[in-house]
Image (cartoon, rainbow, N blue to C red):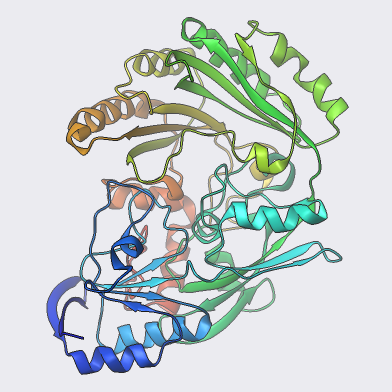
Length: 467
């Protein structure tokens, strides 16, 4: 093992340093999981994250097999002032799961899942993805709110709030968190729940990875059997009418119904408007509730049918791993006629067939929680506007990024106060990060001062300590 050039943290700044080979060998010997350095087999694959635009080269990657490895890695990083990134699913579009020159604490090998069908709970380690969790819970006819993409890791989604198809009936992912096991910056193992370290438990539900490394999550589960879901596709010429109808229809939707609407390229390569639907309740009742939606237009394609929750989780097929991703998002104050006109006008000019524009609501149970009941505060916005730019060729990046920024700048005047922290992008600065935490920001700073006063966990939508 050769000496390694590393990046260390010096207060708010970073500094180059060298770690001796003997120190690295001792570190490796204390791990059960693999320690990967740049010359090791498997390093190139392990350093990749979901967004193909992120191309970073950590000095070391610890492939943790359990809490002991996480503790060993945290203590080693503290002893040598190493820059640390924490990886769960690696899905964050801004690339927080990796870094240049630092230590990546990779939880993705930690895949344990334990379902308690009597208590309707599940306990899962932090390397689990939502598709993996759903596979186990659905055996018992149970599920919890788990985003809109089965490849997303449970850790990042939960810690940032967790919008998803079941939120209208059962609340956000963070609303269903029962407890969490946490390794703190000073190398302690804590259990956070409503009765144990309740302050930390509050902060984990929307405060991201600022306070420690969660090694396991426990969730409340709910009965989720056969659902009704699918996609309605319309010619793009009807996009304004479709989005207006969607707005009005969702304003009176029952908790069991969730739906997204927007613009995409269909499988024939044509620009199309779409409504994606999820109904969690008796299929017969869902057919009645969805009848006005299915009659409107009428759609060019009606793909709604009874389906499993796993199939619902695959409705948003626009997300692809390994390609170039650049996103801009906002919570909107409302879908005014001017806002709809602007969304349709810019959607018509999208520069990549892989790009999609989506509106997703904050509805039902998720919207009735108080702003300060969890660290996630954004309960009263009607919809999120989600501009998902994707493309294959890195040489085309300037064109697609320019279009995305122009679109976002044109619609930002319709935005409310705040942004979804899980979808902050590569160039969202401190002001956007602060707005993501909204009215809870100062309380989160106080929590950071308690659990991470040196900002050891800084590669995240960062809450800077003031101590």
